[in-house]
Image 1 (cartoon, rainbow, N blue to C red):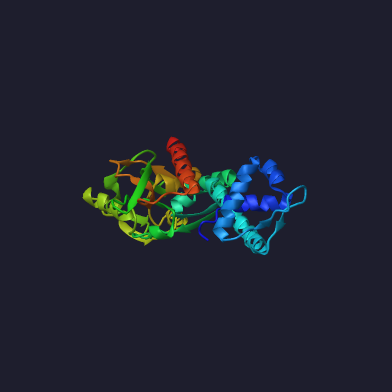
Image 2: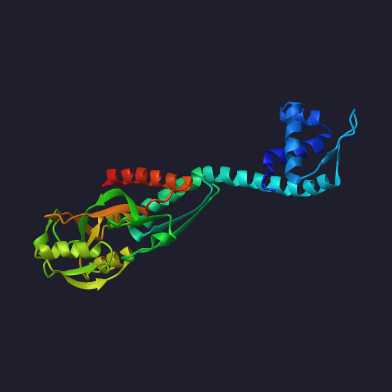
Length: 299
């Protein structure tokens, strides 16, 4: 039965509906001989005649074998139509996209990405998960925002932007303008936990002879900024976190460049290497790069 072809089953269904080879040929845009060839091919595949052909103007009739074939032909053709619709939907961007993120991206780049994807592909399903661990599991997501480059043979990445660090302090803690990095040695500081890009920042400070006294650590930008507003300590945060939290317009805070500047954080979009992206995921990568370019213009 592996010799049965869908095109033969489709022709078979049209002959049933029209009652003759000639009318089926007209509906399909075939010659009558082509219809006859399709039915002959089907009969070879199933091992018997599927139509009785009385001749003249009388319609063809299904044989008992033809009746059996009819039931299953309808099911197979329906499944083929469903497959065709699913493939076309996939090509049009339908389906599920799972994105791993972290809070700075979740508050800035990601909402714009989700909005544009849903505008372009209303039938898509987007799932998000925040993961700020040192070893995120790329097998669980299609795309992952991350702030450390992964030089791993199993990972491909696109660099999105450089994210420079600034000092955030309660208003009046420092004079306006840049702050000398040395002024932070021994100073009270509020910071993120020592994971992701934070260890690299603290290593850069130590290399410059700056060892702040960390009064409080929190994974949430709002918690860090709240303690900074309260005067518990200053914070060194990347621009994206400051911008996403709306701190640039907060009159209780002051934002300062550091002199000399510390090495900036880098933002990447990661995915598993050597894996074909769905059209939806491929478009998400394109849009992410565009949105990151817009953010760079705001820095």
